Image 1: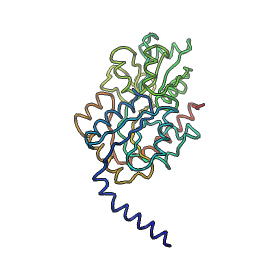
Image 2: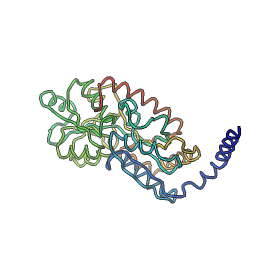
Image 3: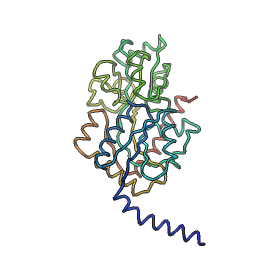
Image 4: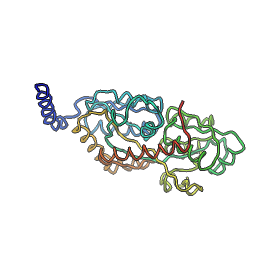
Length: 320
């Protein structure tokens, strides 16, 4: 009985201190773990967001890239970190995919990780090397029927990987060899070097390479064309209606992080996304700002888990 009283007293004190703590938070550097190699969609967003939050908070936001195992290594690090509000994870929609794709990703998503806010999304894009010599997705698929082609992706379990598998295997009945990389940056570099024939990645890390003509954008997976790449058609326009795909980037914290801190960080990022200058910067890179509450983000993740579970089963995707 004494232990119960002590525990209740602790909970009451913690609850009463949370608002005051949130007012002074953060009072030291904050670590932002990005479980992907530099140059990918999460890394681009992390550095933009980290710079803005550092200015807003008056404290450094330290970026730590921890790539590997389709983001599971970095995610597991955050899942096991102290829930003190000073360690966060910025991951992509692969975190929803990995729940199904990996038997043991090294953490339990619902038990060990808390969603803070869905920051932004971007469509994926299928692009070709200039060496391949095609201008459309249809031309690439015709070549794939007579030649052994390969495509790079940010890694198994990314939505870019699964989208390509769905387009190639399910919708086109074409076998193109997948080559996984540790992020979009390395996958794009491989395409520029023509180490692979095609690639499927999110738009932001590939945008400048396409605009400069170093690779060829063939199709975007959004419902409509993107303003930053108006000449690249959608899947539906290319003869493949009924399938849309986006890579979103969300902020997460270790489970047990004080709700007052979660709410403050959510509110601060919501404010940043509403700033015209920051919003315009994101749009120019191919992002679409999202925002919303941590509760709505949690519900969205559950929808995403079910969606990608279906795609994984239909494509027969597995990991070694």
